[in-house]
Image (cartoon, rainbow, N blue to C red):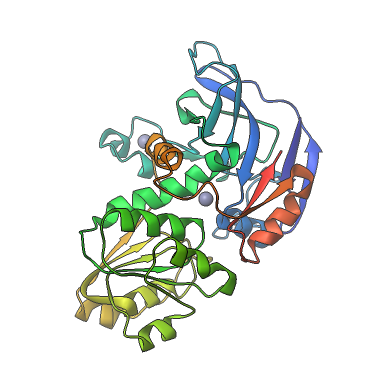
Length: 335
Ligand SMILES: [Zn+2]
Ligand SMILES: [Zn+2]
């Protein structure tokens, strides 16, 4: 089979590799769509994650969907031929966090495309049998792949415990931003504003119900924006500091984005004086069925969002596009 393998910064090669075989408890999936996450792009440009290099060559890709083609010994289903979305987070099931039901912060979690565990930018991938979820008929493979960032937004929205009428501000109008926006509005929040520096991304949030969209924090502050709940969906390095400046006294901040560095500085004086609550959100777990149902029902507009499609041989182009955010919200590789 063919796999797109990263050999170091900016060096993706499509290689012929051995076909994986599903072991006990596993399923073999023919990958049909992999959407490229900004976290994939960071490893692609930096050649390391937090200073750590994976063992090269390394296969990336954790937002994916495909067809089950074979089951390992003792696995009852889903039947080969079933179209599935895949949960990329695979907890151990036995540590203290798993026992408390916090599988997403499992101490021994394996994650597709988080070193040392490889991902899905290949024609086939082996995954735990309980990580696959049948795709509703209404959803194509691209929507199945996008259910992963959607679940990240869903988890963060639940963490925020939004109350009807609360004002909300969001930094970033990528897939996570527009998903969080729609879920917040569905919770009955009050006026919701979005800050998005990329001009081509500023129309969609308005279509989806945002009250206003600003190009920068300064523009929003000049308009007097202040919010009960602020989400960072951008991962920009100054984002936490900007959230602190946007929150009302007593406000709450939920950080979803992953900055491209290990440490940041922020205005702790304002955060303390305003007694802000900051929650850091970590991936998601156990929400795929809920996310797929939201997508299939049309309650959440995501399956028609603008994406650009690439073949496996064009994985480098897909990575480069991810580093130049424009109107298309995701690059999707179809291996
Ligand atoms: Zn992702
Ligand atoms: Zn665990």
